Image 1 (cartoon, one colour):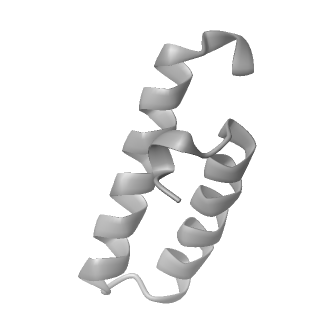
Image 2: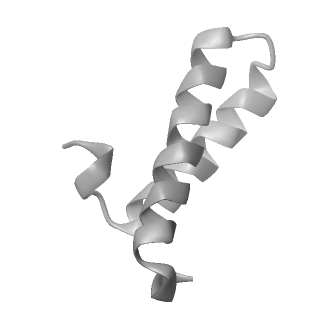
Length: 53
């Protein structure tokens, strides 16, 4: 499923999991890019639906 259609809660959970993985592997650039994409997807979703905060 595209991140665009995921719920805010699902995006938040994904971000937490990615951040934990990044802490464990701080030099993994692919993981960092995935984390960046998750932050951007969540930010975009929250901008469209600010009542989800």
